Image (cartoon, rainbow, N blue to C red):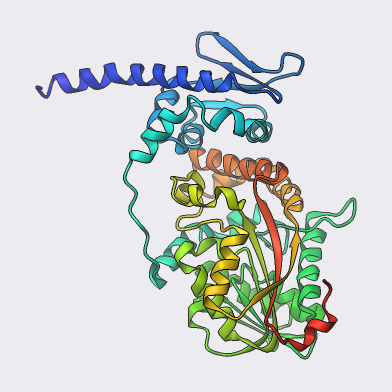
Length: 417
């Protein structure tokens, strides 16, 4: 084929692939039984799917090349198309909830399988764990700049699920309630030395030292977080009780009475789960307790999820992977003497946390732009926050606080069941 002919052939292929993908998608959407969806195409064409007696979620397709993206990109296609401005909706969370509530009948065994086969055929290179890669992956997300995160988090800069345990709580109050809950699980007191794996911006360390009077060593591999957490500890007057250390958790050598880790395990990857629990086991004193807050994917979906291409892992958390409860228990059993004493489900609270973050983010779009981020970045984060909110609202994802201990642990007698 001549060089002149190649562009012509590519131009002819694009509309054909988009048309095929559109037919496949519409055939699958015919299976919607809960709620309704209206797809509006360029030129005024409208297609409605689902129940006739309820108001539909409206999805406006602005560029029909998006259907071709779905054919080639699989699960990446919806998010990357939204980032590119190829489609929009006035209710992004509602759209994701609609998809979640109809996922079983629409996607399992449906006509979308040809699109899935194309996506699975694309090569995926394995990621091997290393200290350097772990630091790079963490920094790709958390080192976007403290000023960016300040635009949508509460004043404590806490970037994990809050606990709204009474009506009318503010986001800041709910975050402090989450810290208090973890401290209660640990039976944390002034006689203890607490190790925190994953510092964030220092909020948990400050809370534990201020409210429970304990000593805290907190470790992070984010330069931005280490710098600000250190400053916040000094400003709180807690520098004598809190050490903020720039270190990987795998390098910890000392022993501690208590260990806490809040939504950090999702960043390390499948191969590192046993290493993570072995490190906690080494660091924990004989009668110690650990509390791990973790986002979980249902056990039944874990293997297919971890082997598939995922939009959030590509665009938001490179190197990350959500575990399942069974996978964590198995990794813990293989690599440590730790056992799960209690599982505290807080997933529904995450939906409300994300709603607060999303509304703050959208209200501060102009300030985000002023930091140098473009429109595609804004759409990416809107998509990410809305997707996660819907996932926790529909229980597609979980969030738990796990209490870990060992057999023959004396303090067990005083712990709740």
